Length: 291
Image 1 (tube, rainbow, N blue to C red):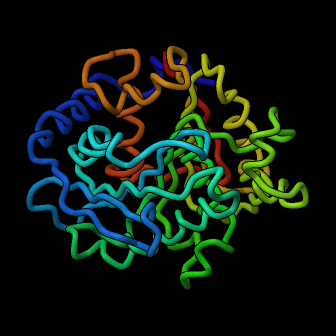
Image 2 (image 1 turned 60 degrees about the vertical axis):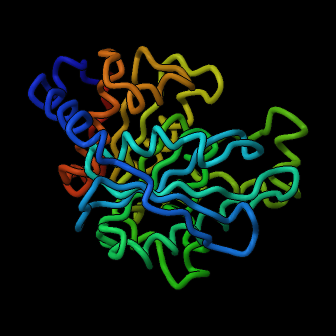
């Protein structure tokens, strides 16, 4: 791993900070829409004023697949939109009312909605990225790796411009609690629930960010997924954040000031806005540590 002093510099960091401040007041919620008949199949859309042809980010929040709501992430969505993107935050059905793979299927339906409506919202459907934190990163990763979910809507992972995972569980068998095992249904389906098992090297570009101090979802999840993509010849970038844990990894997107987490904004902006996702090595070669 290369040290943070060898990756990026003040010019890039200042540019990202400038983006955040310049667009913050203009990033707003455009609309709420339903992507299915269930009350939890709704989403919110955020964008800067006069958005046109911007990349689109579909953000899936975490909550152990059993809690959370899209309005809790309104500030985060505005911060992401302020960087220069159309941001879609869907809800999805939760355990114990449903079990795997229903919440992933809801995610696929939300992505299909975003692709169909992107242009009308000021976005570019050819630059649609999935992003998620924790359980949401698990959902996004499966959509980007297991073609079955998007195929229901006549789409494929090749439709996606990339995936950004924050502190995601991608390889977490055996399950550590009876509740978690129940969340993922009958035992014969557990292997299919692991994103790492669907890597074939044809994935869209992956940006994996994980806090080295994460005690909830171990950073080994991201490291093992990155290694599997590497072994299969896919495209991915692995970023360890030495001062981040499972929760404060989001602070770098929410707050403009914590210097030790500014690398998160920088990495996301480079990947989505500056086209780095298209320049990733194939197979991947960079794994960095940001202090």
